[in-house]
View 1 (cartoon, helix red, strand yellow):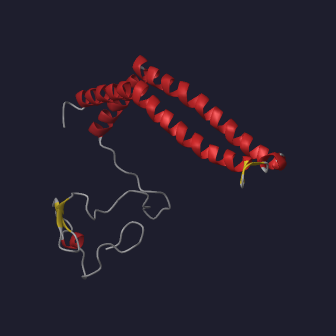
View 2 (tube, helix red, strand yellow):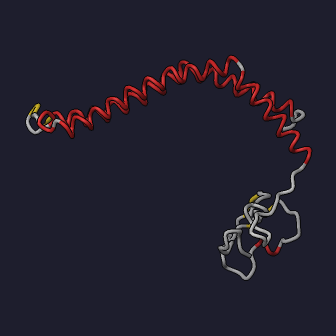
View 3 (spheres, one colour):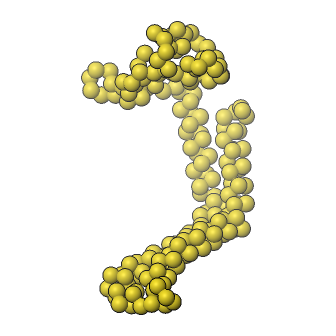
Length: 184
């Protein structure tokens, strides 16, 4: 049996893969080529309808289920509602207030380093201590500021956004659960 990308499937040890033996049956247990068994309903399943054409050069349409579409639309409404909420807007605002200036400062520092290195090689070659020159210190400063910015971002996220984002996540999960009928 071949997958949708044309490559053979399975371990190749026998004439038929476990999927070919089970073809037409609805089993949840699968056996891997090494004899290991695990529960996976999607093991070795064909990805039918995923970009495969029906011979006309156009991908075959995937039939949609009406109930699934209604749930998808309702879940999309939940996410739009959360996105429009004041709590979400506050989390995004806190994110932007940190990231935009941080990126602007870091890019200015980086471009300044590159421009100075190309336009003022005499300045960058000036020795500071022994074989260490200004260019080496500025290059190490690039690494230092990268780590400093990453630390500051993680600290800002932990102190100013994570709790509110987690509460939004739980609220969103509760809303989508209620839209789906309390399942799972």
